[in-house]
Amino acid sequence: MPVDFSGTWNLVSNDNFEGYMTALGIDFATRKIAKMLKPQKVIKQDGDSFSIHTTSTFRDYMLQFKIGEEFEEDNKGLDNRKCKSLVTWDNDKLICVQAGEKKNRGWTHWLEGDDLHLELRCENQVCKQVFKRA
Ligand code: VLP
Image (cartoon, rainbow, N blue to C red; front, side, top):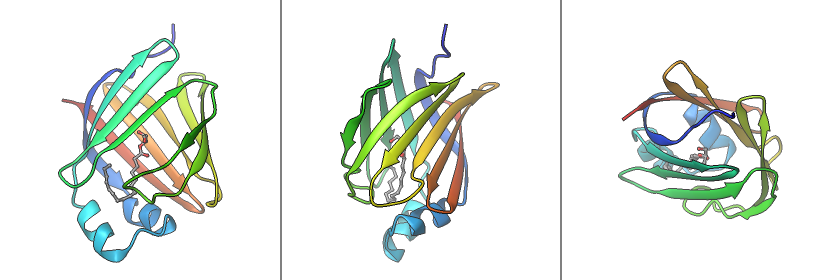
């Protein structure tokens, strides 16, 4: 039985989001707003099908995927770059590789105790986010 990420999660910590956003080429004004946000994630997991809805007072981002099936990701409202994205399991970690213009782009989700962890990677920058159940 794989782990179940389903639920509503609130951001409690966000290390080096600034570095990650800069690597993505997000402009200064947008970064200033974005780093103040406390996004919420609503994750639905049904077998190999996932939806991850990240919401905030500023912008929302909806991602839907199936494990092992590459898809076109548009990153609309984020950096708006298109990627070929692929999510796979690595033991109990969910790993996404976002192939495109930016090197080393992707993310990893895992559960640790009662917390949801997210590592966001772009080029040489790593952002570490922790969420608690709402
Ligand atoms: C863009 C970069 C902030 C900053 C400007 C807008 C949506 C894994 C994955 C599912 C993400 C979140 C990416 C955040 C990139 C910010 C608006 C913030 C709220 O999550 O859960 O897509 O990639």
